[in-house]
Length: 264
Image (cartoon, rainbow, N blue to C red; front, side, top):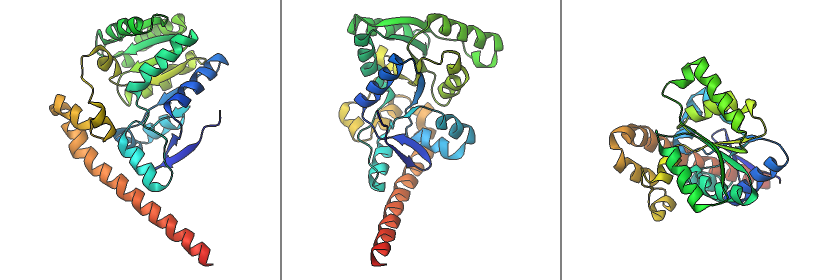
């Protein structure tokens, strides 16, 4: 399947739907070809514009799916619309359902202690055919220990899953995937952030209307104000304004350029 792409502030985004992403992943799995998925939101894009290491990581991803309404709005303003928002927290459900139906296996890595186990119970209850070959919550600071990293890699490789959900928050989860995906190159790796806690009911997701209105951040802020205030209010809102204003300017520039060419 051909994957259409757009660019937003230098970041590559795939202009495909959630169902097309799932179809692509499972098709690649069936052919023995692995890959990895990033689902950038506004904060990820902000860090992408500032940090070369983040840019390098995102440039190697196989699929880049917009998770964040500001990215959807900006792409639309630019005249390069994306078909829909594809959040990692939704993909864990829809891809798990499709994987269960196709007989493909999952591995749950990361999350708060116990959240992956609870998420696995819920997945098995909802999708009786789902195969979960491993659940892993590495200890804090594991990435700084060569022996801990080696042991983690050995556990994942031994489990031999088709799809690995990595719930460590960004950019740690992307860094980890970049470090270890080559040890199981036929698998698909997906960074899913706080999704295990959502699935387990430890953290409440915003109502659907808030998600569609681009207000999910406000719901998260109300639950964890001390931890998220700087990210959303100090860093996020000014960057969102910059993104949207830049998109308007880009659209106007292209329109004027097209008008000038038509005159010539």
